[in-house]
Length: 553
Image (tube, rainbow, N blue to C red; front, side, top):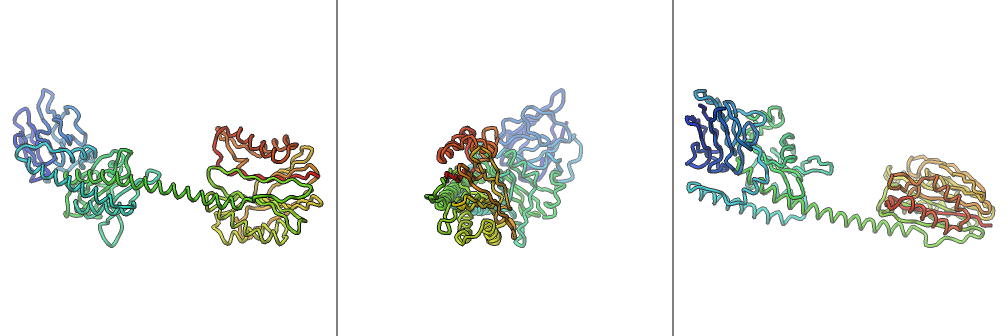
């Protein structure tokens, strides 16, 4: 024979000797073993004796039966020393005649110390009329009505929030109003799936420190389980949780923030010392509150995401306006030369910029192409700033290296140091065909000779704005009749195909050499056609900008 030592959810502990071959456990007074626990079914579980020993089976209860922390899905062996958990009540099995446990609630192992229930089951139970016998019917119905009233109040209250921060504060306000914890925290998942405290009410007004069990958090969030811990001091699960013990935490109740799309995080409430011991009723109510809160959190998050998309769309539109305003509407006519400039935008906005202007009364022609770091409106503003910084030294007739030195140093002083630009600047003397140039970390310009020979005009200095005292050198070449200078941004050479291969400088060089007999418009069209063929439908990640100069006389 065996003895069942019962620590009920309500009332004092007691012992029950099992003298027969069967005992039915439930909240009904008609049960062989009646236990004061609101969340027990009328007939919750049955213990019975066989030739092999004692067995236990769950009788279709709403909240389940657990042996040593494992849910009973089918008849399960039971023996002295085992611990049975039914709702918030604990039953320890001993041999008849053995002394009762020294504590009023048996000390439990790591898997027995906390009560975990699927949150969905608790939510369904909270909105379903309770099964009740005559002795409990009135009490159960009143409690059910009160719970629905609370949920309706919370739903209406949370619907008034207009921001996520405001909503999280209201969630904590309502949980504190109805459950009266000493500490509360809402944990949400970040973009990497890690939990972070999005809102909290600490134990002390003198600190914002929140004490939470990481293992408990994982159980709640990853498995969708509501959790109830009566006392961390008698639960081996928290034996190593020094921070909880040092803070004086005793009782914890937690529930996942879940909706049909997944789990967003969790709510955890706790109390210190002996001020508040949470019950199974509290766990059920918190699960329902968390479900209402999760739907509202999701709705606000979706609304904020939509607003962010609208903001980004507007930013792209404004950035594109800035960029388009910087692209010249027309290019100067230089006798003896053909000039082409074009920009093909990507889906986003880059900082591509080019300019072709005459200076010194037409004695010189300046070609300027640049590509700033980053994208969006910040890149467009930086492009506009570079255009403003360079306009004065260009008009003053400074040589390429001095223009870049002035622009780079001012850019370094006036902008964040992670912002920079690559650029190529060439100054043509039309009369002689002499071209002086400086390359600030830009893609090598291609000098395509009439006979098909190609020279790469490599960097003569670092990108603009990268270092405080940047210096640049000037190089020079002569442009003969039929020679072509091709300058471009990396949106062309770094375009990728489905195999993630880049278009590359070699392919661009080959096309310019093979198609050098085409006029400049046709050459640019041939390049765009070859790019589209290469990417095979893959989107372009960056703008494609090209400026071409050819001597025709």
